[in-house]
Length: 297
Image (cartoon, helix red, strand yellow):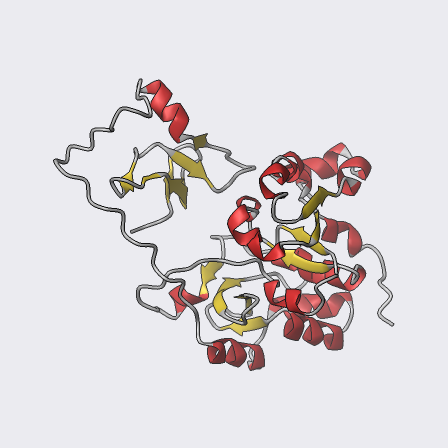
């Protein structure tokens, strides 16, 4: 079953997630769902709104034009990528533009140390492409996000199309059931007392770890990936959220859903100190940190 569809609101492919009726094991309606481009699109048609719009009560069965309802299928087991594949990509001598960018900020020694720490690999999917491997606390490789960066400015390459893919898709692994974890989750095993910082992008987590090593820096990969499922391994931790400027309210509003697992607070530093222009650009903490020369001693 596909999980991402065309969004009719912003006309982008592969960004729309539909809600499923778990009893019938089928989609509620083609329009009921949300666009993952939360900031740039923001479309979200909730099941409750759909029920209200169509005068459907929660006590009234939905007519799916079927005589019997199939039992929900059991949740498939999480799939993993062989760790040897990750290790091979980390040892690759092929160009890696993201590592080149990190080296331009500091040095290749620092860049390679970060690549080893955060399991950053190299992919031949595109010339110079990077793989951000997601490794959970049990050292299982969930998958890797393949992205292409500009070596000079560290920006993602989005023209003539958005250069992003998953390693399990590039490897053509059949029946792969991806269940993401936070990027950097494997680092949680190093120090149970160390506070955790969560940002949106992998790049931001990596850069921030150089400037503020008193935190374990994790990335959720997209604004919508900050959720209870991926947060269960943070139980008992002190967690600080560092949202991009455009996502402050979105993340701050999620804290009540997460506080049963850990102690959360949202950093207001960027919101309070940024200009209106910077807020419009949606800058993140790494955009400010790279203006400072870090103490690497």
